[in-house]
Image (cartoon, rainbow, N blue to C red; front, side, top):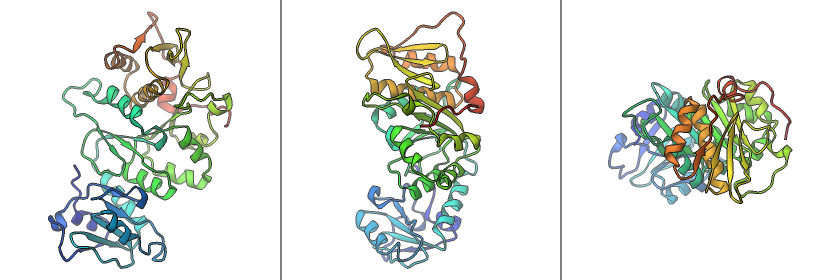
Length: 351
């Protein structure tokens, strides 16, 4: 549950708050629980934040937002009359206001945030994250469960948040990254193709929105089991900018170019293995999509700082019917640990 009130939001953004003739029940103490930057994904009860650069660009958007059910709108300079029971917040610069709010939200925050991009934000991935992470944090007792929500929600003080990104227009992605400040964002192949289409300047803006200790997990596999070529699973060229900026990057694939591999096994159709360094875990009885999602959750746990041995133990308890580890008496985590701490030194072939 958010604790950000309309009064606080107006103060932080240097905005002018206007309540409708019939104001919200809580007045300026009403809380803001959700922020949307796109009318297409606007959920009733949330705040629509208009990113238009001019009054002409924002013409009529506030009215559409109210008609859709928005509790309020934030507009850049131009006038918008709030409907009954709603509110309007007028600021001088909506882009600057995002940064002001982002700075405010990051103060005193002691939590980790995972941001799942659209290609990996479906139920298999959320279920895998729950199975592996929705328990007391590794090595701790009494810790709260992670909050699993949409990236538009200003949720809670949970120490771990798993947020799902709904859409990919560049302005809203950048704004969402600023507000959520993800320690780790997780992308699928479709997300990677979208990033490959962006300019270097746009990629730099996305990197700029990440915290200094940010990390990226890229799943280069297709959830529909479509065969992929070596060039499709090699490390894409756009990752070079992230690595150069100090962002730790891990890739899930099906060949030796990947840090974590999901590979078919001779046991029969539908049988796969998760290969990490010199460790191989059987994903018996799982669909290919479930296997990819499980590998993604493993990569997320590793990048969040959980010890590899604890991750394997957790997998065994979360999936007792599926995960069948076969570990040598003295196994090593070769090829993975250095990437978890400092990122890869060789970006490999470009896609």
